[in-house]
Image (tube, one colour):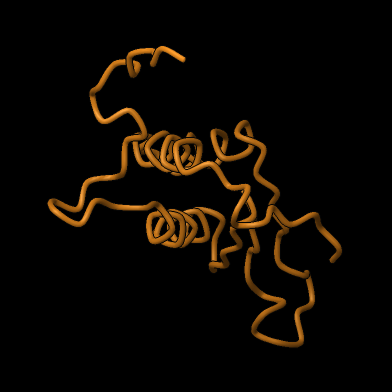
Length: 111
């Protein structure tokens, strides 16, 4: 299955974190699956007559992160777990890194 991969250095942590938060906010599996598709996620259902264990799983991809599960909802849960591991965290309190950190723009320096 040839798919375009998003390199890790081009993956925006804010976009990834927002996608995770949106998917976690959906309680029902059907609404979570619909939102995953709306975010641009690609899903591959299991093969109808699977010979191997891997062929009997759902495979999904969003923002270059792959996950698998017995159902699409379980695969999305696995994707959320994988994505949260890739969100950079602050060393002090473990919250996601905020590029602005509550600060305004830096003052202009005279040249």
